[in-house]
Length: 224
Image: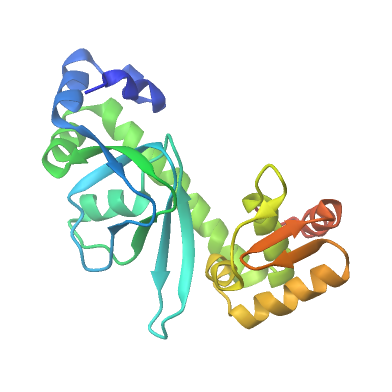
């Protein structure tokens, strides 16, 4: 196992030698192909994953079947829902899906529990990541309740656009990202197109007027 992964996570480099050794020997690096469901509702949280490469999308499905995007886990981060479930000994209430091929460190529950109990440095690492994501979730709630859909969509398009200013997502996917209906996304994108800010093709949105989207977001003080 390549132990250099510890350097990729802020805070773990300060671990004492004995705790670092226990973490290295008790964990393993795993690879997960794109599209794999990493966890789902009702499943137990058996491993804390620290992402080395790729992204994991975490979303929740309502009783009506609508999917609501919660957050993404990127390289150098851990999943707050997994942390919460492991600390509380509860099952997952949402699903996590590999958006890309993912490489991660899997820390089994027993190793996680032992290190949380023994090491103040490891506890600080776990709870610092936890608190950052909780803040992000409160921001998400604020956006859903108080921000206009057009502003939120503009911000999300800017965040998801690749180096060529193309967003690879269907209207349904964007609706899930924002926790709204596909029809609402379609109407809003049609208005953006009328303003000359975007062009659409199957499964793609090309930003042709990034400045207009940025002005809308800035004027509303929206979050990415």
